[in-house]
Image (cartoon, rainbow, N blue to C red):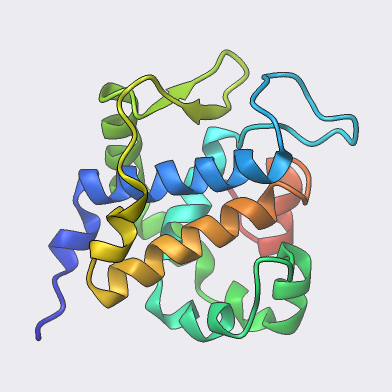
Length: 172
């Protein structure tokens, strides 16, 4: 079976990845409000984190680092176990900017996601994709969705975008 890069970089798939990232991030904070949690973490991810989440989620080279973790592992523990994640990540982020931006625009235009006045992303008013959508995808796209979900949960517990970008050694 051939690898279909176009299918995985189309705006609808990237929108779905972003939706699952935001949903996981928000679920991990345990609430739907716009205000900050008592520990200072945002309830929703800042849109800038999309530019990290998409290239990391879509990177097959990082699959081994994800397959040996759990949802409870945590972002910083993942980075400490696999410091090589940072190698080439700045390049990957740069190369995926257009794909991420197009997917983000599609998600916002279709109202799957909203961008709030503080620059955070929340679930929009459009009908939500069925929960079993992920299970209907081929294996590699399923893994990309799982990575996006795991990143959402992990990043929700770390702190702001500046800390996440810094930990990954990526310049926005």
